Amino acid sequence: MEAGTLAFLPILAAVPHTPDWSPKVAVVMILCNILALVIGRLRIKYPSAPPAMPGGALFGNLGLPAVLASASFGHLIGTGVILGLANLGVL
Image (cartoon, rainbow, N blue to C red; front, side):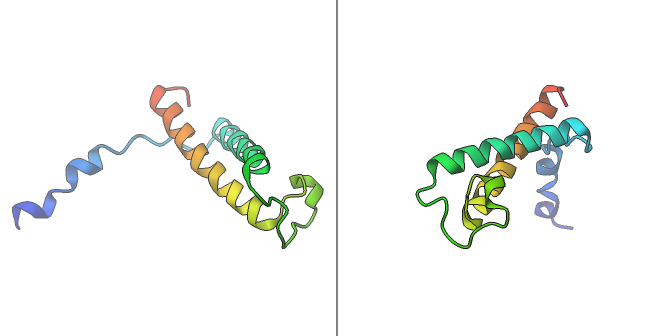
């Protein structure tokens, strides 16, 4: 075996501990997604671009593209917050 073959192993050791799913983790992710939907509603140039969401009033009349973009952003924020809180020992 070459010496460079196992060069990636120190990287694997640097992976943070990820918490198991719990209601606390779910609440954090939900709050981050709600925050992202609010940010999306305020900052997206055309938030009600078609196609419309079924039950549009539930999402503040956001169109499907805005909801998908905001929810994706919310999951990115939520992942960072959950990993950060787990690293601090809160979760």
